[in-house]
Structure formats: structure tokens, C-alpha cells
Image (tube, rainbow, N blue to C red; front, side):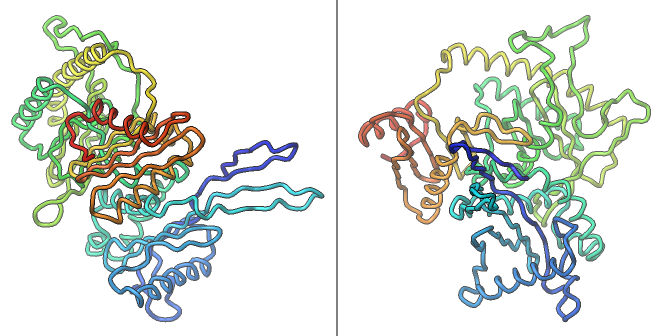
Length: 480
């Protein structure tokens, strides 16, 4: 993770290092209560090549911190510990199970003359607790989506099964954490919705109904276009974490150029046979292959009596993707997959070209996209809707923002202020030379705007934000 960025300062070079993951571990203090048994508490530890006694010492230290802070506030255990070199985050997702993530603070390496070793300056205030605390909670939610709770593994096969599951899952998942590009969007964990006209939305709804009727095994369906959600039959919190998995992990692995040109609606009939670009993103890669395996990933979602286990079938045609969830107790066969492919493929292909056409027409009407004077992030706590013009592209490995990291940190700070109070409020900050940052919180909705206006004053900034609310959020009531 040594990601250095040099700043030219005369002949000598300064190097900047972004935050990086030092360690990540999961322990349960009740598993090794007696002296000499401390190692039994540790269920997972990354990096794994650390010497046994150091692991025990680090876990013991976290236990001590948690216990110590409990004496002051028994109901609210410690969430983070700040030190000069790093920051530790603690999270107890289930009784006595603790997840700890240690992040090294960003630092600047300054060269010294006379061949002395360089001086290192740690930037202790650059990391936001809310952002990285959210990342730790996400790690657990993602584990739970694919494995169920820690308790479930304990019931099924004791500590041995749990440690196996943690190893298998986190060994891969931790490689996908990109701590240097975590920001306010991680705190929200929102869902980007695709804007649609009523007619196209009804077409999608009737498609979902038809498929669920024909293939009665399907319990839940979700429909996405261009990595944005259009329809979901899942509970919000389950959809939020499934959405994160699809958009940051599964889809980027399978991205490919569109087969039909963006503007060319597909020829609907070719010799009486519907054109069909559908394929499975999970399960069989090729239905024609006699050796094809019909195994799908399993996910766990909330049900009335706890949770249920489901097969996750993700099926894609062009930019449209449909997720079908089927009870895990059902055996999925070649016959079922061929039926699904035959039914869904052609319809989804048509729908994808419909949406694409509609989207293109709307874009033509609304005129060319000009680079606006402002960039914004919007989040609605009620339906988890999120919209950002600051993030240019979130790929599997990096989240590109089009603004300076210092401005992203101000957004995070404003968000922390909003979290402390229940009332609606507005905060305006004069940031770097040409920048103003405005945060508005109104009735479960939050809006953050970055304006790049030289020599603007408070009144002008306020007017500009009002204009933005009128054009972008005309149907949303923001209190003045």
C-alpha cells in the first residue's frame, strides 16, 4: 500500500503517503478466558504472517481499551482510538464478537540534508471516524450477506467453521478495500436510482410481474440499468448491501462494450426470432456447455423469522441487469436455467434498448451537459437515494472524485455536525481560495454543494444554491 506522491520542493522531494490498512482482526474475549489460552480468542487476523505473541498482545490491548471505556459509559463502548501513527476502529456487531480495523494515518516524508534519515510527519487529523467506522460496518454487512451471522456459523460447526468462513471471506474482501478513496459516500452507503419516465417504469414493473408469474420459484427480483437501481423487491437494508456488491464487485468484473449501438434500437424481429443478448453473470457461463455447473452464490436476507438463504441469479442483457432470488432449499437445474434464459433474455434485451432510447431522447431535450459552476452530493435517509456529481466513476479499484481531498474532508466534517443534531440546519464554509462549501439538512435529506466562484460573497453563494435546488431538486422541499 506504499502509495507515495512526490511534491517538488526545491531539489529535495517530499513524499506523501495516503491512509493504508495496517491490520484487521476479529476476536471474541469469551473464547480464551484463562491465562495461556489467549490465542483461542482470535478468530481472524490480517496480516496472517504476524508472530503469534504480537497478535495476542494487540488483541489484549483492544480488549483493555474497550473494558476501560465501558467503565465511563457502559452502554456505549469505544468506537475509535486516535494515536499519532494510526487510528483504530472497534465494532461489536454481535454479542462479544469484536471487529477491529487499524488504519495508518496519512504521512509526509521530508528528506533531510547530510544524509540523515528523512523526517516523517503524521497527519493525525486527516482521517474521519465516521467514514472509516462506516467501512468497518460495511465489512460485516458484506460478510453477513454471503454467510449469515457469526452466530449461525457457530451453531452449524462451532469455532472451527466460523474461522474457516472468516478466512475465506476476508482474505479476498480486504483486498478490495481502497482506504485512500473512502469518503462521505461510504457513510451514506446509499443507492443511485435511475431516473425514468412513467411508461418505461411500468414496462419494467410488468416485466418483473410476468417473470415472477411464469417462474414461480422466484421470491424476489431487483432490476438495474447502468449500475443504477430501478426496481427492488428486497428490504432496504438488504438491497443497500447487495447494491454495493453488484456495483463495486460483480459488474466491474464483467463489464464489456455494448453490443448494440447506444442510439440504435434493436431490430425487434429477426426471422421471427427475438434478438437476445442475455447471459448469466452468476452461475453457468455458457448454457450450451454440457459440463456447465448450475451453482449460484448464496445470500442471506432478512425474513419475518430472522433471515432466509437464497440463490442469487444475476442475469444481464446490454446495460440492464435483473437479479432473481430463489430459496436455497430448491435445487436449480439446467432445465430451469434454460427456461429463465429463454424467457428473460429477449425481453430484457428489448427493455434495455427501450430505456436507452428513452434516456437518449431525454438527454437531447434537456440540452448538452455543461460543466456547471457547482458540484453536489445529495442523500435521502428515507429511501437511501444518493446522487453525486463529484464522483466521476467508482470502479472496482478506485473511486475518482473531481475535487480536492481537502474539500471532501470538509464535506465529511459538515456531515458530522449534522449527525449531532436533529433539527434542520445549514452550514456555509469558505474553503480554499475560490471555493465555497454549503451543507443543507432538511427533513431526512442532506445536500452538500461545492461552488467554485472567485470573489463571491455569502449572499451570492446562497442565491446560487437556491438556484441549484430549483433546477435539480424542484420536487423536493428544502426549507429556507
